[in-house]
Image (cartoon, rainbow, N blue to C red; front, side, top):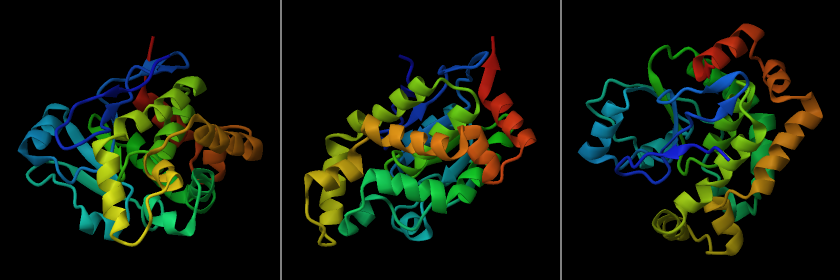
Length: 245
C-alpha cells in the first residue's frame, strides 16, 4: 500500500510528501504538496530544509490564538503564508468537552466546508511553488483537508486512508508526551480518550468521515462542488497534483 513519505525536516515529527500516491491515470507529483505538524521550532536547519524543498506557500489551518502561541519559524524564507483556520482551537483543546474524532470531523465537514474549499482553491493556484498544509499535529484538520484534496484529484481511497492512519505512529512518543503535558497545564486530565484525540489516527475515524461525505453527496467531488468549488477549479486541482502516466 502506497503512503506518503516522511521527510526528516528538523523541528517536525509529521512532515510528509504525498507524492507517489496512485491516482486515476497517473500518480501524485513529488515535491508538490506536503503535510505537516507545527512549524514553530524549525530553527535554521529546518528552514534550510524548506528552502531545499522549494516551499513557496504555507497554509496554516490554525486559528490566530494557536498561531500566536506557536508561530511558524519561517522568517527569512520567501514563503507566502495563508492563514485559513478550519475551526477555533485545536482538536486537542476541545478535549475538555469530551468531543470524539468522529464529532470533530463531522464539524469540519459541515461547519467549515467553505474554508476547506478555500484551502483547495489556494493549493490549486500555487503554480510551480510547493505547498505545505499544516495545523498543530498535522492529523485532523490537515488530515481531512489533504484527504479531500487527494480524493478529489482521483487518488485511490485506500491509499488516502492508509496515509491518514500512519500519522499516529509519527506522533507517538516525544510529540504526544509533550502535548499531554502542555494541555495538562489547563486542567485537562490525561486519559486514553484525550490521547486518541490528540495523537490518534484510527482507520475508523477517516472511514466514517468519508462515508458521511459519500452518503450525503455521492462523492468527494460532489461534496466540494456543493460547498463552492466549481468544475474548473476541480480540474485545476487535479492537474496541479497529478502527473499523468
